[in-house]
Length: 318
Image (cartoon, rainbow, N blue to C red; front, side, top):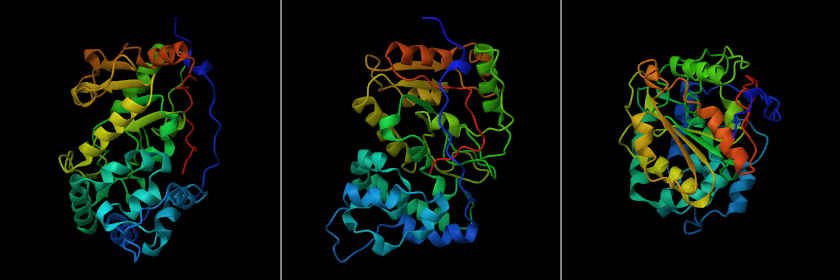
């Protein structure tokens, strides 16, 4: 099947941008105690129902308002679950339900204890607390049709916001993303690379932009590796692998390819190649054709295509 021009694909409905900003350092640390630690209640043996979770999360509040309003008395959560208000308040309900078993496991309790110390300490942590699970709000579980795996969040200021390879609105694309734009141009010469690096337009179309580690210390790459995030993101990948069919997994670089070794090739399409980093892109990333191949596969399965050219800077999805 021949590849179609990227700009001919459907256009996502754009949602009006809500006025919001990243929480200040003080506000972020004030929210840590109630966001990272398990909530307590007199009814501490009762697990929150899906209806309660959805009523607390699916609304028109922006991300900052959602985290700020969280209070211990808002939820009834078993102490044994080791689930915090952060997961309930900022993870989309479809993902919260899909991953709820992970929140009961020992590694998750250790991870949350580590994060509590990190966010309350002197180190700056990226992304801001409210954006740790933004990937789940941009791409709901039932919408996933493409998965792109990254590694660490960006560790410089004003970049990371919870989507791999993506940076905040108004920020120029980092080198790896510049090369991704170059590849799109090679696949479709009519593609016009945006001056920004905000990939919310992809994520809102069902492209899960997932880092394998979800937080990092400022200017310290891989500083939160090995603390438990890898277990959770393994569960994300395995949940998509087992519960869905005909998903395109795009695995660039050895790290992503190792992470995706358990994906069922009979149920899904796996596209592998060098990482788009300037250090490795010349080894075969350019002209890999992955964006067009992903759409060819989706079309062959009767699924909606991804408009890779749809990259509005103003798009937001809480």
